[in-house]
Image (cartoon, rainbow, N blue to C red; front, top):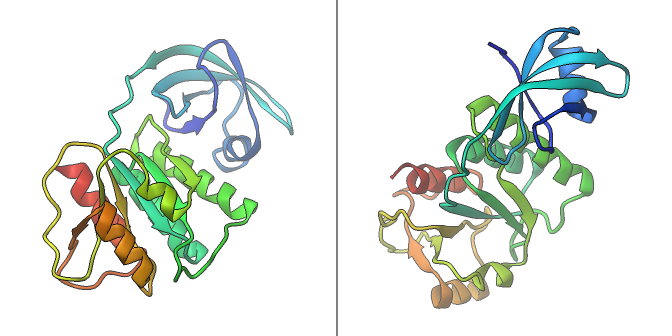
Length: 225
């Protein structure tokens, strides 16, 4: 049975070409040899066993031997997370992918530590999500997108947000929701007013949580009940 998984954004059939970061991991980290078998995932429910047929500096040719398609789980949790320092954001993406978040909506809050995300930083977050998906055994890859705060509040599904005031504990629900967490310095007065109009306030913990801790706690609650 193959011991290593690789991600490829393609239908898992025929002969496939692996490139970029996954090629580097296959050839230089795991040192897979021609004739050896590996697993492939496409982030859309597909899982395949494939044999390495050819290897060059620019690509690996993999022949699919068998494949299966698992229906994707119903989306349960979309996490809206403020932009923060890269190391913190990477931690959140990694751990919440492992815990089952379906989507990450990154937004610049008024008190965010950062107000933008470079193309390189965004690509790194995507690679971290792919790595976490492979490691934890998921077959679905969560999406990562940049959103504006007002756009998130306009979504047509229930919205909850982490509140440090005298809010209730998170309700038990199996319905899809969006959960919004705030930056290290908290939501601004304007953001709180908008949230109070459009969203449900919940207290995730008796203590005040860091910006990178709150999404993980929310993920544990909303994906485990």
